[in-house]
Length: 126
Image (cartoon, rainbow, N blue to C red; front, side, top):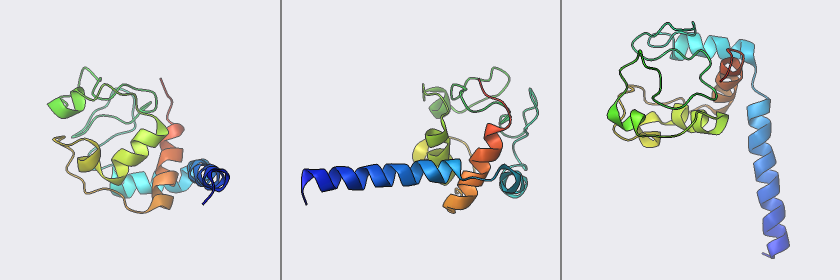
């Protein structure tokens, strides 16, 4: 395959991934949150549960809420929660943060992840 075709394939794939994020439905994402996340996380500002609040999680430094006892693995991340990083984490938390304490196998459905991310984006950002 020529370099030009490889570049075209890459551009199309990148656009598809970006469209998946942009196509998420926040209303459906609220439902995904309710069934998949709410047992451990809240979306209220300053209200941690078994897991940290997800209010304004986009743009927040991983492991940075002073009121929550993160795992050492999460505190060492040194990254900011972007849409891409959250999607990777939600997809497979143990792979994204080995040694983390989130007891969740991950959300395998890409459409549900896109919806959940659209919902989390409505909750404010840093």
